[in-house]
Length: 167
Image (tube, rainbow, N blue to C red):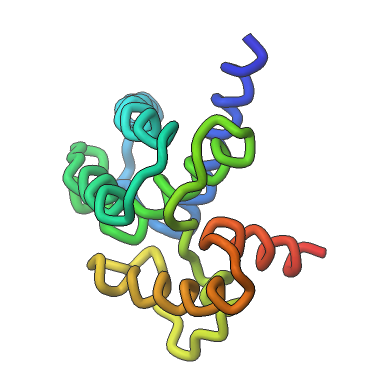
């Protein structure tokens, strides 16, 4: 019961973090329609997250993000989520599960404006507008270089940068 409570709270934080400023919904959608969408999306994400109990390769991780972009729903502005929003939903949810020791270290982290600033990226691309894997991987490559300098995983790097900016 306590674990399920925490997982529900994590899902709420994930949706809040991934959909903020993203204008994902088409016009004025009913709360029922939005709730149906979020319930279906959660089922998809939970199914994907089960694979992360074991180490997942970057290639598989990218395919999982793509699966989310292929998920269609009539309440969405473009009938589906773009790559940037999809990565944020999956990576944020995985980050929380990893911090709870529910899964292995995820291959990436949630890419957003703040992490791009922390990485010193000069030309910041809004994550809500990232349409391709290539846009996303430019940020991941910059993070990979930084993580190599300090000998840590990408997920650990993001936690360090997050801690530094929230202190």
